[in-house]
Length: 58
Image 1 (cartoon, rainbow, N blue to C red):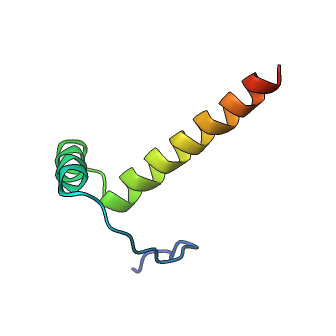
Image 2: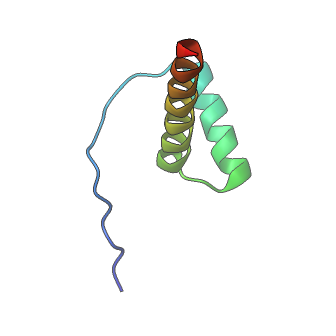
């Protein structure tokens, strides 16, 4: 039985050693993959940004 492929694009970027170590520790502790963790954190950051833009308009 094969996995369903996710609609995704490959992205390459550099992260500091400090960030990679923290990400690796987080993933080991939570059982999440690095991909899942980064997607979660990026979307959370974007959501917070969008909410702050909305609050600034008020």
